Length: 68
Image 1 (cartoon, rainbow, N blue to C red):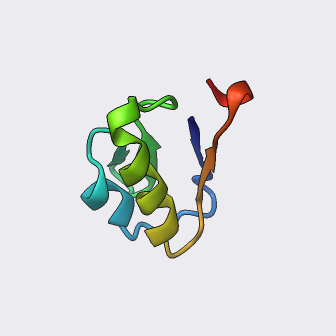
Image 2 (image 1 turned 60 degrees about the vertical axis):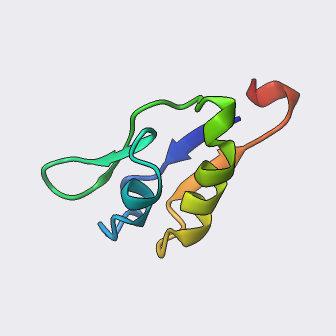
């Protein structure tokens, strides 16, 4: 799994950070910061949930062999 966040699309909703602070944070402007682009396997389900909950759809999760 790989995670990418489009900071230009981010609207500072904070749902990603609230869902999984081990992977997502916000900078001083409130924009998403990906702390690790390759989350640990135990965080995969919540990473998908954070992407789903993003109101701006600014988080992209890529899965599969090429994402490892």
